[in-house]
Length: 440
Image (cartoon, rainbow, N blue to C red; front, top):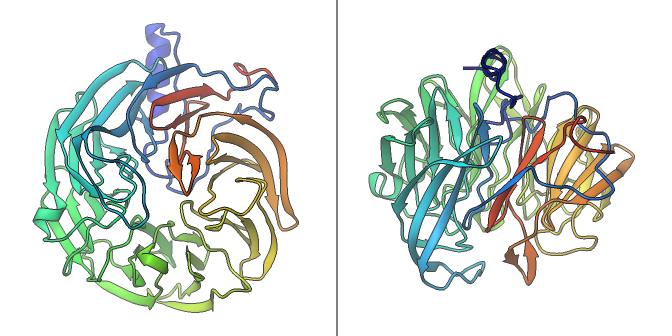
């Protein structure tokens, strides 16, 4: 049921709460990090942001999904083990992974689904992948590869797969992180193992429809669907190469080598017209030109020390003839699309100075961007070829995790119902950004 249908139903029933657009998966309704709701504030209030509600949760990096008046968020309830972060240390913990369904208007818990899960990953706060909500079901991928399909209304399990056991693979050192993708009848997941880096399941039954690709490491980048010349392609960037596949069969159309440092293929590949941009740390970047009349791709330029943008935790944004993205030392850059030439860079959006993995998540709204940085500040800014133009900022959420000796919040927010939904390792909050609710 579409959100507009819910709104009509609520009005008919005389309910005072009203829902707007949903954010049912990674990067929003169209998986493109664009927020399309109207009636959003132009300035954040000088007195700061006051949550409509807040609800306690445990640790996790997974951002929330919002659909049909409900918020879906995952966490890890640790029972034993040392959770200290270390880039090369697999922490061994016992506990439970949980999926919470909250009322989007009040934050009240409607149901929780939990299962025992022993962790053996680095940065072990909790799950990484944003839930995907579609067709009355919610699909959840845990840090150790527990893939679950749940009834979205009740939390009742429909089907599940232990990806490590089923595909004889080990969890990547930083956990399973590729946000599941619903495409027609398929649920497409990043897995790993021999001929199973990508796996398509029947979204209603869990039956395997096809498997594809082999690589030494699967990486962390989510499966992505693009369309070029009227033909749909599945883009899968594993730790060794960017690949274009037939989403119906898993047949590999093309493959271009691209290895990010430490196997960190993370950022979502982004399409703009005939171009596809892929970005990772270690000067790993490619601008590809798609053929249009056939599913092929040619390299326009590759990254080097003088050009490009090299994203780690966040996903770049392509607009016009410019790419905007946050590099792994916290510098937000604007670069020329066709040449990779650096136009400008700034640390103002992240930490104010160079630090390891300084992060800000970029979401476009009309002619400006909303950015949530790892200090927990929400920023409204314009980005163009001339630079970064900050309009205002307000503290949204306290950083409760730790990375390289500083506190961080590394979780992508959701923008829905004219609100922002954000979480750390202690709570999830909802803050209205509706012009009627928030004084400028």
